[in-house]
Each structure stands twice: as C-alpha cells, then as structure tokens.
Image (cartoon, rainbow, N blue to C red):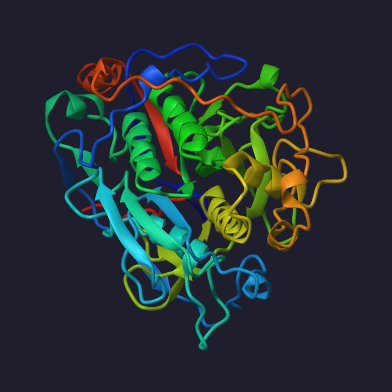
Amino acid sequence: MRIRPAITVATALVLIASPIAVAERPPDPNPSDLPAAAPPSPSSATQKRSECAEPLALDSAVSVEAALPARGLWDLTRGAGQKVAVIDTGVAHHPRLEHLIGGGDYVSGSDGTDDCDAHGTLVAGLIAASPSASDGFAGMAPDVTILSIRQSSAAYSYTGGQANQSVSNSTGVGSVGSLARAIRYAADSGATVINLSEVACAPEMNDASLGAAVQYAAVVKDVVIVAAAGNNDVCHVAEDGQRSWDSVTTIVSPAWYDDYVLTVGSVGPSGQASPFTVPGPWVDVAAPGEQVVSLDPRTDGLTDAIAGTDGQRLAINGTSFAAPLVSGTAALVRARFPELRAREVIGLIEATAHAPARGWDQYVGFGMVDPGAAVSAVDPAHVVSPRKPGSDRDAGRPIPIPDLPSETNASGRTLALVGSASVLGLLTLGLVAAPRRKRR
C-alpha cells in the first residue's frame, strides 16, 4: 500500500530456487510448476510481531462517493452469481460486506477473515460494499460473493527453521510460492474473478510457480485475474519508464504474464497517471487510486486514512485500490454476459476503456476503465480487443489449454513446495498499498 505522506510497508517475498536473469518477456508457464491442490496453511511457523494498522474514522469534510459510477448499472446487474477471490491480508467481517466467506489463511490459523493490516478489507469494500442511506459510498458489485484468502501480512514474520533464516533481516509473511498456491486454491474454489492487490518486483526473479498458477486459473479454470501494477516507491522504476519489453529493468509479477492477467495502473482525480504507478508493457487499463475511501475493518463505518507512527493522518493511495475497481467491473461484465470467456471479458474491458489521445500508454494502458460501456456493450462477444505496440498477441487468438500433470504424480510441484527449505534469494512484495504499523 502506498500512503501519503509517502510511506510504504513492504513484505519480504521469498524467492524459491535461484533467480533467473531479466528476460525481454516472461518464460512460458510450465504446468509442472503448478502448486499441488491443497487447503491454505502457513508454510512455516509465524508470529505476530507488530501492532495492527489503525484506520481512522472518515473525515467529516470528505465527500463520500463511489470512485467509479456503478449505481446506474445496477438495473442491469449487481454482480449476483459471481465469486471474487480477494487474495490479500484478509478481509474483516463488516455489515456492508453481505456476502463474505472465509477461504483460508497462509499467514496463521484464521479462516481468512482476520485483517490486521486493514489492506484486504479496503480492497474488498471497493469491490462489494453494499450501499447505505447514510452516505454515497458503495462497491462496484454489491451482490458478488467475496472469497477472502489471507496470503500475506506485514505484521507477522516467520519464527523458526530455514524459512525464518531467509527473512531474518526482513519483516512480513508472504511469498511468491504462497501467492501461487493461493491462486490455485481460489481457482479450484469456484472464483470467477481473482483480485491481486500485491505484487513481486525485482530486476530478476524465478516465479515459475506463479506463472503456472495464473495460466491454470485463467485458461483451465476460466478466471479473470486482475492485478495491481505496483507502486514505484517499492518497485523503483526509472523516470523514463519501461515502455517496451526491450526497456524493462524491473519485473512486476504476476503482471508481466500479460496473456493471462489484466494489469491496472492508477490515475488521480484529473485522470492523469498517478506519480507512483509503475509503468510497463504489461499495463492494460487504469482506475482511480488516490485519496481512497472504503470500509473500516475495525468499525461498522468508513475510513479514508491510516494512523501514522506519530499520529498524523496518512491518506490511502495506491494501485492496490485501482485494481479492485476493475475486478468489480469484471464481475459485473461476467454477470451480465455469462457466455463470455475470461479472455473475452478482459478484451471487452480494454476495448471500452477511455483511450489516451496517443493510444496505449505504459502507465495507464488502454486508458481509464469504463464500467458503463463494458456492461452495456451491444455485441460483447465480437468486440475486438485492442493491441499494444509490439505485441505478438493476435486479437481474439485463443490461448491453448496446457496439458496438466496428474494429481497423483505431482512430484514437480512437490519439489517446488519443498524448495522453500533451500531459499537462495529474496524479493520485495509491495502490498501495493499497505498501511504502516506502530512497532512495539
């Protein structure tokens, strides 16, 4: 999470196996790297080491309204029948999240509905908060079911064994491996949309299991995967950006698996790209990600700020909060047009976005997402997805379904999981908007 004044809490992402050098494009996912099907559980013992984030009550002077206009679409669809998996820091029970179910926990022993970091609840509120007569706030698709899977937390750390040694100089729980396992679990649990408001970013990485997981979810299970583009105070991209694959210096995963993931950048109130949004040839669309208002996980109300260590109000900003607006849009589209495949949903959202005057842009992709245009499309099955400069993706080209190894012979996946015992590197995971905590 990126918060103004500019502070970011990053969680160390454990890089399983040795890193690979930067490539112009991601390697083709290998189904043998797909994590085995298993219920969520921590890969190593963990312990809570810092205080939870402290959301502050909504400033009475703040005008509360939905970040994107969706109410006018609710006569067509409110997202009923769709299950959106929020793989994040957990989602707390809130009276305005009427259809929340716990999916499990890779951090500790909860069912996924504990949220010490506040991040996941903010994200879920933007997707599915029900409207209230007392204010103008509401999520994009209030009738969807939210499946909460806690995959990371900056308030916890590993306590023993080699997993602890690998992050002895870092804080936080969450790895490329646990993110991959969570995606597999969400896809197998019937999610139709997966929201990923956290990323791994580094000059080089080995994220083979993550690539296999997004391919499996998107192609085999027909899930729309929406990922945040990342924040530059964590991902550190040079000012000239990375417009083409040849100019990439910082990989953002899983965003760079562009065939399978819809990647979302952030814009401010003026519609211009936010100064913190990370550019890349994989960015597809953008949505508002500044001065966010959403659900307070500690109360029944709303919040627009997190308490800093010195007591100041820290506004909530980040691509973390642009992504759920697009996830909510995807859920509306899937409910409205259930015949569309995941790739077609992504193409429709790209094609109906408000394109920049100069065409595709490395910061905002094909432009600001337009839920109204996407949900009210006259012939959505025949909308041609726009193409990026230098893209080799043919419009409408079907992505072949990979041959998956038998679940009874999952040795490759088992080795990938066991590999956590021999960690050879670290990545930085930006809870692409994580509130700062007070240290004990």
